[in-house]
Image (cartoon, rainbow, N blue to C red; front, side):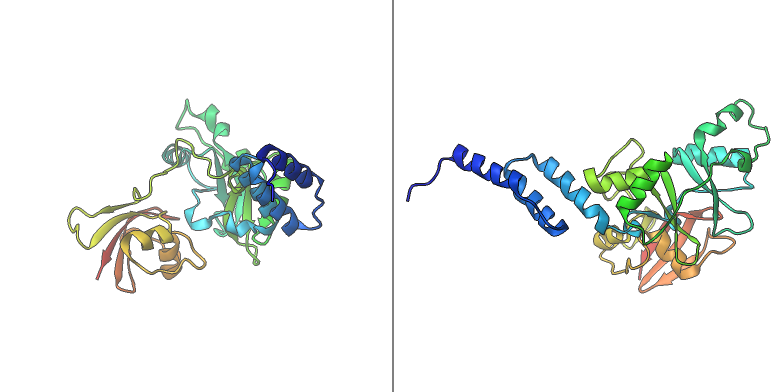
Length: 277
């Protein structure tokens, strides 16, 4: 049996592909996957990302609250500037001083520029912060993308079923679901930089950045902690001890591990010593 030449087969396949009429999302996804012979792999991956958005809940995309860099509405200017410089972020959720579970606004770093010349100036965050956009954990990523676009904002506060803040989602977070990881100069991109041997006890103790994903901690140190409900080492520890008045110095025993909080502020954990056995 005589086989058709490559170009002839390709043109017939392309016409067939262009003439197909998918009736649902699964058929459309299959059609996109079959288009790899006509389109660049990056284009196919992007189309798959677009089609996956309606099936992706915002809780799968958000940054959990334990990993969020935030401010409080009664913070002083010097404290705010320290957070801005350390984090290099451009937008910050502002939590209520009376109800620490609730975000009351979003502060843009650029709105503080007029105060940089006089660091002793009194700043009322309430007068500077923007109205936050709230979305539920169960919202679809494509719906939130549309909401952010329509409201011309880059960040949304994710709330749980009780109305408390469970995390943040940015426009970049959702776009990464379509185009893949968007790395900038502030991203830690090398695996393993989060975890280093403790110089004093290099065989059974490690210094761990608190935002280390639990999955990476388990993989590098042969541990078996669950990431159900939390994603980072900080989240794991806060889930165990809750919010206490003084996080720094706290010692937490989990399985055959001992975690000592080395650096923390009143709202989040930054650095931990993890000791096995």
